Length: 399
Image (cartoon, rainbow, N blue to C red):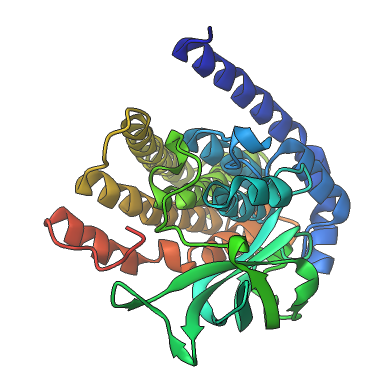
């Protein structure tokens, strides 16, 4: 009979195997950067490698053949992929966040849509679409933004307000919201992804027109999940892997300056007749690196410790406190703010070296600026979290 200790040991082995496989993808990812930049999406061979790794389906229940990794390990994989390249980490984060949906679908539907190694998800859960109630399901139309990974997705999703008889259908006095699942063939992808950073994510707009969606191919995170294991007991946990993207980008920025410091020559000191100095000889470099390491370490510790505490509570089957829920969302915003500051400091420290496309800091700076614009991690999210700390209602159902 397997014990809880045996189960944890098995998970530890799986986690270490996946992390090692993630690190082994670094050469392929770096070779793929020119194609990512040219095509503004992930190339097919890299997508196949990420599928085999499991990077797109980290939250699919083991009952359906998924990995069902704990939230700390999901963040760790995204962090490592983002250290290698921000776009790759971002696509992994988006699909793995979406893979939580499998726990809310009927088992047969989840197995059919999410059980294969070829699974990957793209789309937007914000309810900007319209779903008219019809026999057997819904007729859905809408235009959605930011379909990260839509070119390689096996399923695309879109949030909708449900309409019945031409009017919004009310549930408990509020319009009913559901997320609809579309086969990629029913979506028209628009060529809109011309951006500052995260160039390789293919986060284009997409349009759905009068598409039929069966009842069973939709869900709402407010519903009770069909899988009762700890990973699915707190719906906003699907956002957790967002934390890995900024942590990985900031780590790469510090590493880039560490490498540059040994070879970049500084302008000669006009008060000295002889000798040249490298970036690594300058006391300003020493100070900036020390501060950056401390800031990133503190943010990283906050991220993993708060997630670990939350996870232990869920594993015990206990209800999360308002403070835990607030700190979780504060953490998601905070790690992005810190990573943006760290990356900008490293960019400034590198001076003119950073402005060339051949320097990794150029890409890292663009990627962190773009990542920080996502609504989930915008500073405005501090407001509902702060309300919760004062014992007030958050005013947001996803808190």
